[in-house]
Image 1 (spheres, protein in one colour):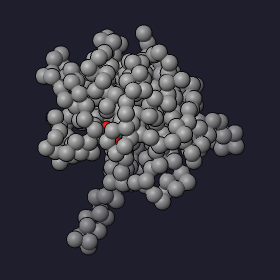
Image 2 (cartoon, rainbow, N blue to C red):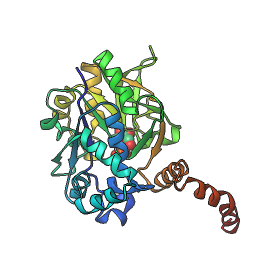
Image 3 (cartoon, rainbow, N blue to C red):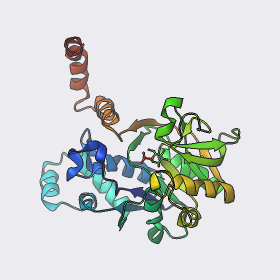
Image 4 (cartoon, rainbow, N blue to C red):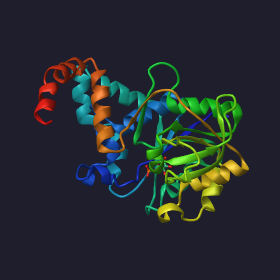
Length: 296
Ligand code: G1P
């Protein structure tokens, strides 16, 4: 069966970016000049996914507006005929049906995912956590690599990355059997373990493809770490019943979930752009060393 749907939870408060996120959703913060969410939408469309389900909440209506037609701005840009981003946005609009459901209360990531069930139904789906930007220049997008795996194995598959032991407490960490055919079979998943309790250093960075049975496991998941309904607890149940695979995906990863990661994403992605890349490079090479010298 073709993977048709993707879910992105966007109800989070974005507290790491306050005060910017007091009235602007974190998902619309710009990386260079495109909102974070647009990078995720591009990744989804590249995978041939046709429907995007946003799990949204209070104060986030600007996200839904973003994908609508803005007649005034678009008419002006059409006249000038010089808008690359408008072409990109129209491409996304014409390839993605976007719907949103509300997470009335912030009860955890697992709860947010469960809120998607009425729109997803009994189909497999992709799940993207929007803090991560995955750039793949050639070849399949990050989520597409998981989709392809699911389409051949019919087993839920998640992306993992190796992190230093000091970072395991920031992520969901998987316990796995030895790798076979490029994938690990997941035994269980622990949410943000301490370094001494971590079953491995393989962390979940936020790309998942799930069979619909994840919903029934989420329904019976009790509040776990921090009193929240944790997706990772339902993943353990999924691993023990229907099975769960983990694999590394290729691509350039940016963690835009905190200030430093966001700044790095802005610098590196801006450097690759034809319009401002050369000037930024010039600035970094000629001006920055002197500044670094001054603040030493
Ligand atoms: C969430 C998940 C965690 C995952 C992480 C990736 O945590 O609960 O399992 O590894 O996203 O960013 P959060 O970062 O929202 O606290």
